[in-house]
Length: 128
Length: 134
Image (cartoon, each protein chain N blue to C red):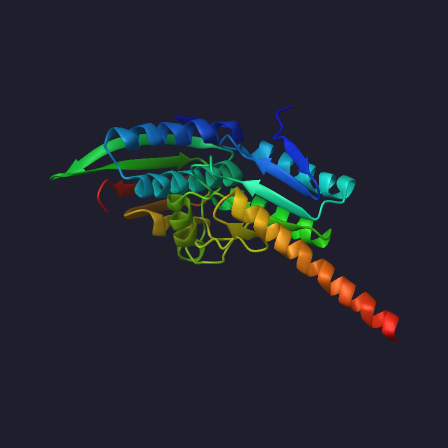
């Protein structure tokens, strides 16, 4: 799903929710996942003027979950370790986006190349 | 343009957020509320977020801003009706909702605003009394 403007955020969140409901994720985990998704989509809009998202249902043994991938062709992140620190922000925000988002999900993976873009993928397990 | 309605009830303003807000709607609400506090001289703002399924850092910041701005204009803000899952998520995310009071529901929120207002007035009265006796 393409994200190009701020009005795309709510429909994207709704789509994530549909998938979460389909696999029977609990309300608390749904809320955490959707909040995390919202943070990442906002980041993408703010720093890279949008990008592409991917929603996948995955399973590992008996456990199932949702993987969300956010791909942008923005400026990239110079120092990922610094960006993952609480309280750090280059934009005019609270600086809780990335580290806060990481706390909400089970797996968090970020890859970035300066000048090429950033790819973030998160996984939230149904029971996790 | 889309707007969230703001209701006036005595000395208070009531806002019920019924839809998931996109950014423009949220920033409009922030501006409208401050305008309304100014226009009506309201002493309290009550925001019902029971219909919000998520509050992310952006929305949290808007709520915090409203609280701070209203306080500067001598009005207290109380946010009511937060869903349990939203509260859990906010804390894990690291968002504290500074500058706003919270209450379980609209009724408790109104009580809180009344108590705040009354205690303010009592202080003013006792100060006035003290002035008179001097």
